[in-house]
Image (tube, rainbow, N blue to C red; front, side, top):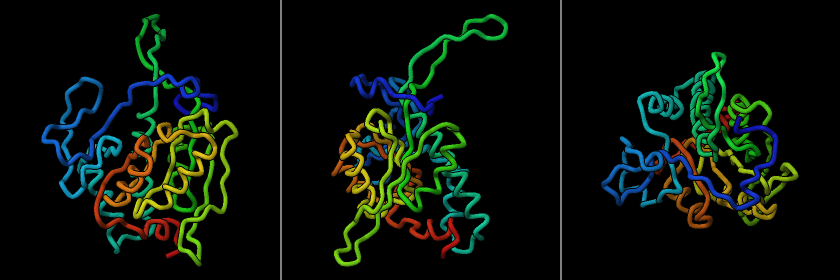
Length: 256
């Protein structure tokens, strides 16, 4: 499993694994993006309005199921029960793809019939970090996939006087710097909160290239701000659109 509570040896040693990639948000290319190493893909590029955000921004392959979930979440007439149900489904899809971005190695197992099967296994030693409070909505989806994964938390709010992002609380696994970090924050609007969270992780010796940001919706400005500040970070989301559903946290937790 990619989520066992053990150290990630290749992170500390500097050994790199090829990243499995999904649909790129690259507006300048007319050629479909590569989904996996040297294999053809039917993935499509994104509209010009996304400002050529580059390969660090990855979008889930769009299909009617994801499109419907996005529509229900954005619809102001959606009941809270339906909102939470559809949000949880979309979160699960993002988490599953986030796990697919983690490093792996080849292995051989023996089936019950004695057959040798050549497969893969994920490297161990990953953790999740949620940016409170809306990021906590994604924790259960991660735990559903990884029962023993450790999850840290960061609380960041705007200072009433300066309006700048301020860290009020941060708690991580002691060896977080040795792990791949799945950073969870569902809505990227300005990107300021995530930028501050990554700075805190860097203070704990986590390298941005070992951070995978899991998000549901992003604005072009939010994604661009994060990538400009941390070019090595990976952002995974379902949609990049100028208008983000900023009501997500209130609707999900019933505080609207």
